[in-house]
Length: 215
Image 1 (cartoon, rainbow, N blue to C red):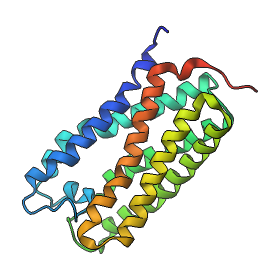
Image 2: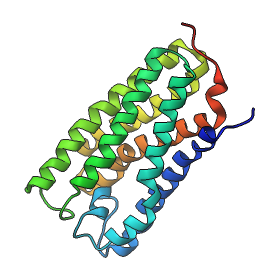
Image 3: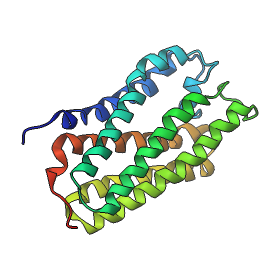
Image 4: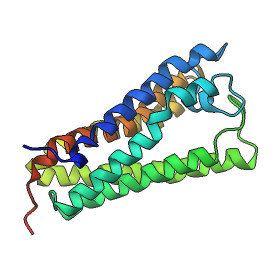
């Protein structure tokens, strides 16, 4: 298949994942005393965090690459009528979630790392999270259902199920596990959406087989 520019842009999702992973793995090096098994990833990018500069450099492609990727995925499946309307709805909601996440967390980043939520900015950070989590779950569930109905996108449905399980592990784990292991289970949640975005980017790169849904 001759790939068009929009297919190549799908690789931006994979590069976004690599950028985010690098930031999560290497930013603690610039944060003396940071305990990755105990602390949240967002502590690394807090305004007062000593690792903030390194985080911003390593994650420079994460936000823009992820948004470019998911936007192109949404455009491609819309124009080519990939799979069913249900599947396309799930992807659109996932794209909206990414937009809210990228804009919201930049506008309302944590002002201090590892402290209790008190200020307006910190409260809004949690509000963004409250909006992002349901959208993530709903979009993934819709994609899973669509995958069960259409073998063309069954692989994507399976990946969506993996991402959803990771989100639930993170959500339940942060409550169930001892505080000293909070950071471990929290990372399941934060990598779920970034990883699934990379998966959609790869499918965009492959062209979703360019098969149109039965109308």
